[in-house]
Image (cartoon, rainbow, N blue to C red):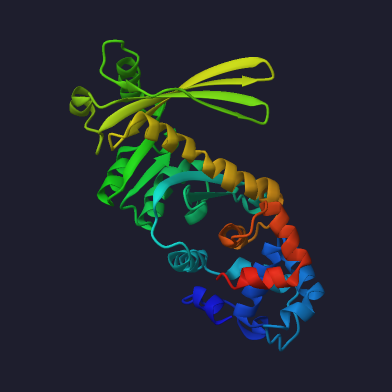
Length: 364
């Protein structure tokens, strides 16, 4: 509990009077245990606390009994989301160490977090995913997809980017974001589409010109779940004229990845274009682009399908934001656990095996 409490240093307790009947850190510990066991909201947390009281009394005082679901709901609605996010960053600073490898930036909407009565739009969480570490490194919330561009610079400020390669989708292919990544000592591989229309057209013409100088890697073929995908990466560093014309911060190379997919006898193809701040080999470029999809497959998919985040109906106050951060922490703890097994299997085991759940809590 001492190490767990250290994670929440600087987090103010917003409750007053009788609302503060239960200890803040004990409520947070119960909530974390509940999420590790598959709880999706305050009602689940209340049921977990009641059914697991003997286990919880093994390391908690619970002087006033176990909290009710109203207690959990009230606390997470009232907690300052910035302080809660800062606590997550302190947790990650000691949990994962220095950022390294590929850091993928992407956003996700919590679909059930809207509130029609108050006109509140669904919460949009923008996350930094450590593709090599397979951990959530940082996150920040916005109230709309359109605000993701302004949220990403704040997210990058939370990270130490020296020696990393930051990847984003085309929405965040922006001069300010590229410049910030370079200024913070990182490199970037940014997806390029029509939102940068003139630059996109020039890159397409250059990479598809037979006379331009470029290097193409051998095709890489992956086959999984009935799908065969062939990816061919091409890089060009002969772009002095592009740099002169567009003045893009840190631009050192441009590249494209041609993908051919075969699914159930049908073949589709697409070509994606990218801006790079480092002259990667086409083989490494292919690996980096492929790594970016880890934020979809290993973070967003798990949150939606395994942890059922999109069905959580927490809508009031700061609840959606704070519970999303709590899920990220739980996901990281599960990922840090060295025992083999799927996330779904680990969640079930935590609910069934008190000793395993206790061991997960020692990872804080």
